[in-house]
Length: 309
Ligand SMILES: [Zn+2]
Image 1: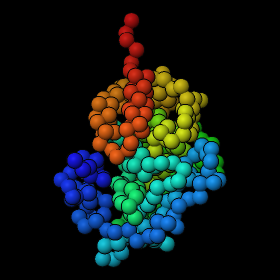
Image 2: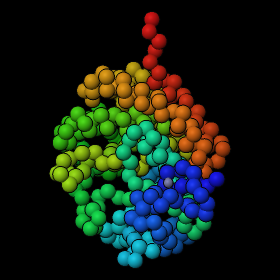
Image 3: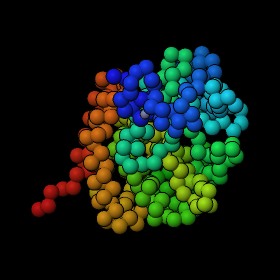
Image 4: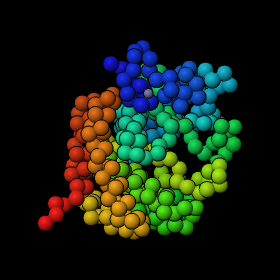
């Protein structure tokens, strides 16, 4: 059975997308072809041996649709898509990013519209940008590195608590956005994403002029690629060995009511069975699927409330 390259649900072959899924990603049920020379996109692996981050290995190319919507091509300015091909360093990275994004959605997190697309015989990741409106105009958006007035190179010099303070300072409705931040950070830990750094969180001004968190983007279960990968930003001082109590303390730092903490954690726990199913629907090899399943099972167990004495 073939699987839709956006939602991973079953599909009648020979289609690659459900019509509604194609429409969400491409704005039309017609699938565009990609007009770029893949050979030129390969990242040199040499300098990347032993890397501990994705940033250097992953090429991000801005693409736009041609006016007849038949072709996705490199856009110098105003491209509405981010395109990420395979890398030489991290095998299956586009598929891992796609699955991680779908797992986030399954966990109740709003995500960037995204999917896989085949180009030159290889699977690539494609996401719609949300810093552009339909007419191509720019949306005001700043990532947390900019908000913290730190250089891009210092994107890993953050913490969960710094993100909380930035939201309190800049978001229009901090309680709402702090809950979303908490959900995103909890999910990232659950899925083994060690790349949630300051540039992978952003605030934007929506059409009603409300400053809020953007949908989640650049989510990757890096634990599948980098052995024992830790969180990019510590939560209450911890990059690893987080427990339910760590998340409880962080929820208190976020000033989330206790019932909100309980329900967010319960929802993450409840996502497990469907998440394990979704992993099997992905095109990742069996070993990688198993590793991700183990990650989710282990973190879900850590989130379970201790039995009452
Ligand atoms: Zn679909």
